[in-house]
Image 1 (cartoon, rainbow, N blue to C red):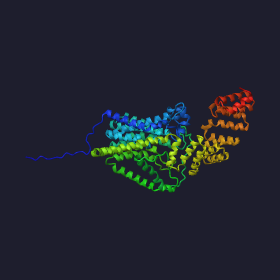
Image 2 (tube, rainbow, N blue to C red):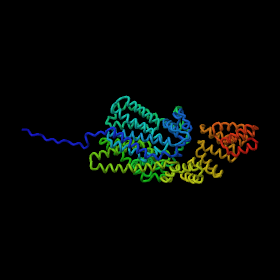
Image 3 (cartoon, rainbow, N blue to C red):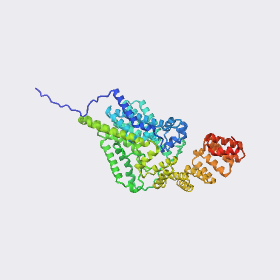
Image 4 (cartoon, rainbow, N blue to C red):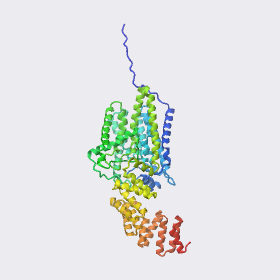
Length: 620
């Protein structure tokens, strides 16, 4: 009789078969997450345009306001080429112009992106509904994403991520079915993403990460060949970005940058070590703010002195960065969850860390928009693993997740209010970063335009003290002093603005207006000629001022010609008619002068000068 051999069955640490959720549960979860996301941003619907890129992209952009799609598809704005984003702005233009359609569109696209995050997480987690819900919910309501959604000018963020996430889902479908049509669709979506924002060039590397997560050999011949067109497009858009940021037209194919942007001139002598450690601070703070998004602000200023750059936080951030790389390497052949999730985050965030100090900010909330998907996915997969292995902890873990989600929701609702208007936005920045010259300069400009001259002067003087090299501050100070009736101080400020930025036309045209008020028409005409030479696209806004210059010099025929153009394009309003009437009076054309005075009254029925001239001429 033979002895039966006893065998012990091996029990898997995780369930061998996952119960698949039904279509109804999936649809309900998607709608619930989208509804919570929209609720978090509902307070943004009544927000205004803010004085930070919104004028350049929309409010003062005739190509957008007049829906010039032929220009929008080729033009460079803000040193960026993102034609799909610009076309989408034009589609939101209403009469009268209102910020609401722009903000509503941003929120809707963000809610759709939340759904795409849900579906991508669902696919990558082998259809774990809990993972998809957690990743999508935290992505949708995270306050670090408020900047990308509530700020109209960051439409490019939500739009490029929409196409990129759709492309990632299409590529995952390709990895499962290997049909050429799916790969072609992936390529098309990638191209649309690049046309929405240049940051989309990271997509081919994300494709490699998806191969890795699918456990497909990365260096397989087919895997390499199929990505060549993607890397070629990424290279193309990278070259376009480099060219247009130098005010180029990319070999005549694009309309060059027409915006007077100011990048921070690098004058602080940072050491080599500081240049290595400071960029890693952004990485550390993005990870920290994933869990504790406090404080938040539109600007996080760069260190202004070498002493500030020696702060211990930069050394800690560098060590944290090395630890992050070590974790990715350690997990690369183990669970792959951290390697994939943190890898996704690093691929998206590394290009925007300040390896070369440019601009006034060391980090920006908007750079977390796409990159957080990787961290949230790794977090959700870790939580799912814990709850599957240790069922006793399931309740406590999900309660903790609910508390975190509630905290993030409340913070997002509150932070959306920060973007209500320009004054609120920059006041928040000043409270968070009291040494931000940009914040004081922008708030001062806004208050000056609103007629709050004394408050504007205080802000602008503070900005001047913090950063004496800002030409826009001197220009605004000139306008403020002029508004206070101090022409000598105004002229000194505008002179300084021109000295700092001799190639920018705006300061010269403002100085020309001041020269006219001071009765110095020859100098005014010289400045206007130079302003037109430097910025030909602004020529239409110079006719009225140039006409005034010729009027003061008694060159009436030339003045009339300029006022004719001003009237034609609506520059100068009622005063353009009135001043042209004065010229015609001097030239003996009384009938023409009376017609112009009546034209001035049609635009401004209370125009005192026109009323007086018509009475003097005995005209009704």
